[in-house]
Length: 189
Image 1: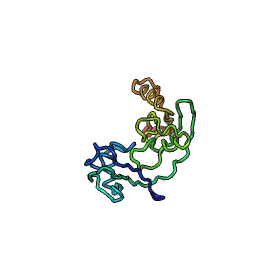
Image 2 (image 1 turned 120 degrees about the vertical axis):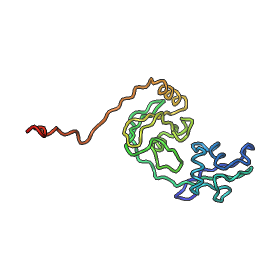
Image 3 (image 1 turned 180 degrees about the vertical axis):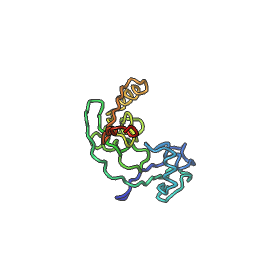
Image 4 (image 1 turned 90 degrees about the vertical axis):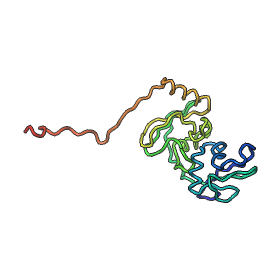
């Protein structure tokens, strides 16, 4: 591993994986990496089989070592923790930051920043890419995002969202505010 890259590695030990495509095996076993993402990263030249660059369609053998080498993103920007309870961390998400990663080589996200202060959140959701985020906000949206601190809390909160039992409030701030209409109105004077 170099200073500019992170490596996500997997050794093939499951007999059911022998003879399978590398991207399929990575998607099956590497937390937070889907087959589609593994395939895309492989096509971009980031997939290695036993230390050699490989195509996503390369077939694996027992004991093969699969590695995805991805560019290291910079440290996440600091975020404001609004409230921290036994079960949840509530954070102010700034505009311009994604809530969670979709690919291992994505830029740092809100989930990464929260995990620095609350590492337990990283494993609080079934998909590690979520980092415990109970919901998401669009990249350009500022607002509060809730992060669960354990899997039970994450499941409880997600059930509340599915049942539409969670009250969501949306406020808009317009800067600068609307200007007054011209007086007298055009065409009347």
